[in-house]
Image (tube, rainbow, N blue to C red; front, top):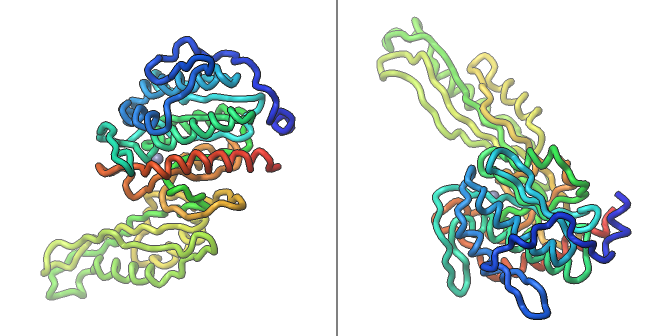
Length: 375
Ligand SMILES: [Zn+2]
């Protein structure tokens, strides 16, 4: 896309359809001769946490983000829109410049239960502190700093529904705005994620024929067939990937049989494989292993995901899934980075370290600047 290069440091154009007038005074500060400024990052993170936005109930935080971004748009000549997903649920998108070459994006919905914010010297606590209210605040503050220093051609996209079915990301994927790079935010402890493992889940089911256990030759043991099938599965050489490491296998549950004196007629096990690539070859190997012994019924298939690398950033690999597959590349090449750790996300101990929030504001700016210069 040509236009982004020419306009990177062009003067910001006046806001076309921002709604500056509706910005509540409670979260914008008017300082004489200096215009309107956003809260600091700690205040903004806490304000976002304190608006409950469990998946399906994102409306209020959506209005808040629309108003906050409208304040930014009024200062820097951007425009803000609500992208409806379903009644009372909408993504919020802010665009600065003619082409949003780089878009900073994460989700605004959270898992239950809601609990309000608190803080001490080190951390901010509360539901979604790290997944993802702190990330939203870091992205907004990074955008503010980039715009203040004359940057433009930037997008901010906050979507609904990630925690359930990625409804917001799917809707955004149907309405791309010309972005060439998508920086997605999930807690990675401020490391750039190079990839995430996928998953492949089966129910392995064996069937047999009941008989008195004193006459096993009259029956057919489903449990023995299942054990043979599982033993064959354990011998399968699963793919190893240079970046993502080895595929891993877990036999998570096993059940079957009726009583010690009955030859069992049914048995099953649940098996989950963490994939490091496409599922096809692994699926074929599993089916070969169980052939003649049991049936492999597929329950879930999510391929592993490879993400963009960038020179000069510390990297990691994560095991969880994100909105990135739902975007399907429509908002540009995806990157994944955010403050906080996934180990406390979705727990009652959810928190984000304050130094990581501040560091994320710097890292997002560095990433955007670097991507502005990429072809
Ligand atoms: Zn998340």
